[in-house]
Image (cartoon, rainbow, N blue to C red; front, top):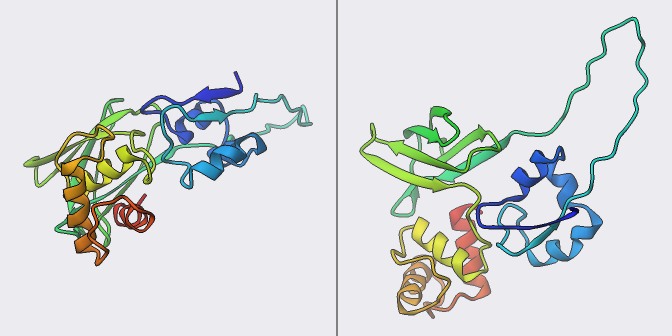
Length: 209
């Protein structure tokens, strides 16, 4: 099964690591050239995309019989990166608790730019990020972020940045256009309400991915 058709929640890292590959090895494979042309960020793929994953090959390594030989597998883990902002400004040094659905609980604080950056298991699919001693909570769906130039990716980033409060339905309707105009005005872009290249690029950069 060399090709994998992605579903919502799948991502390059989990697919590659679960099959014993480094994600970059899979992404850089020649059979993924067409996919790389469509998707500039390997971490934000769209359901329906087809990813080529090569078969693992057996490799023989000589080793002496009278000594202990150690082999190290250089793949994993993956990292969760989430940026916290308030009115467009980073939230540095914010203590947080991250509870993952695989039973792992992690604690820390955001860096100077407001980032949560934690290594997590490839089995984690959802999580709860708690701030201010649990008074503020955010439900996280890991691997669900669509590409920045797709309608669902535009809506997700607008909502994450606090400009949009509607459904993630892939329809660039009146509510999404109003949110785009608010974002464009905040970034000194032409407030056209259209998801043009300049706007989607600014959304990607503001969101962090």
